[in-house]
Length: 378
Image (tube, rainbow, N blue to C red; front, side, top):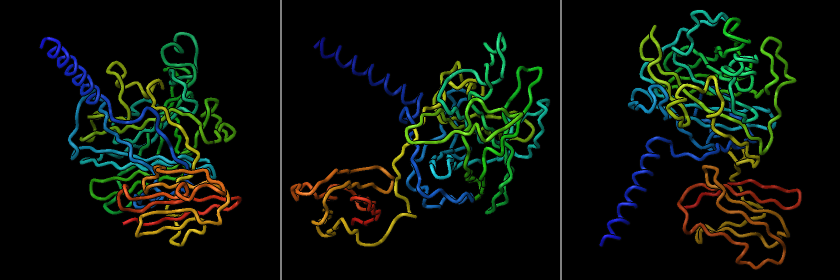
């Protein structure tokens, strides 16, 4: 009996520890997998663009200010999606923000005096293209370097400023602020809006949709002498640091009420993202094109036969060799097969019998032919 009680106590402590961790940190993978899109979204603030269907929602739900706090969803709720394009060499973001009071009216100027841009309602993007940690405030050495970094472009802290559009409308006008200089004595605020070549903020009552693309630059970028030569070529497998956050203020002319991030941070670093990249979430560019609505074809697949009565697909007999894959509508690969001529027929079949009804995407490749199509299982 004593051993049983001891076992129950240990199990209870393990469960309590697990619950504590789950309350303190979001349920998310350590690495954000950013999917490649073959057809970039149209940047117009319209979240119904079906190109976004293949990307997963990620939450903005970690309250950094006050650390560990909570916010009612009617006051603030946020989530976002990310994709990338090798053709355009851009990263794309769609953020959905519910905010009951939108504080705007910021006017950009490079002088840091009275330049309180974090006290407005701001969407922030923290990007470190080489996933290195470390301070990122100034370009300096010595004591300043120890406290504030030796390279301000080791990472970028984009504070995206936009005015609230009229109900049912959108705006494409932005300013994008960060800190540059060699010390606090020569600090200045660059405007990085050219780093976001496409932007739209739309509004549906208190729901706001931030949609934009952004270029990725390396640590040699010089804000006083900007060059596209410092732009990074995005590729499959590239590892970066990437976090998002939102400054939420509920009263004009005051300091921000809350700061909500996409990743958990320890209390000692509750507001360090702007100065230190060590807590950025790891992001990996995934190279497999996840089919989207632009690529869907409601036609018979030449290399694949679908039987709706059996809820089954199978290779056509004329297939010699190639690859076959099935994705659900969220873009998750649920089946893949490398096939060759002469394989048993039952190996060349796939059944949806234990999968939910819905739309699925099939890709089949043989030789230099690749077919993308969709089927509806019901």
